[in-house]
Image 1 (cartoon, helix red, strand yellow):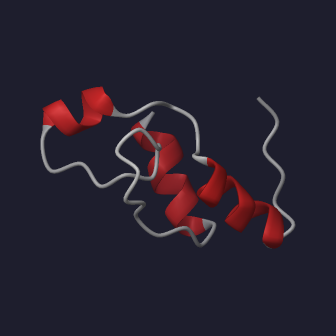
Image 2 (cartoon, helix red, strand yellow; image 1 turned 135 degrees about the vertical axis):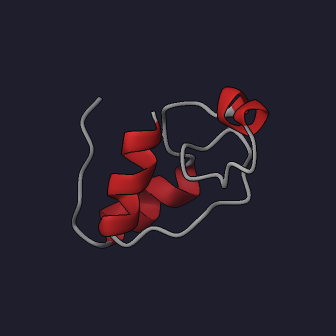
Length: 56
């Protein structure tokens, strides 16, 4: 899932405050374990606003 996070930075996304979002900042392995592999609605909208559509 961290590869999705890093590629998303290349696509223009910044860190997200939603701890479950894949774009949440991970300060420890515990933070990584709390995250989901999906984007929250806010981050997904930011991608769509850039005409980037994610199919899962």
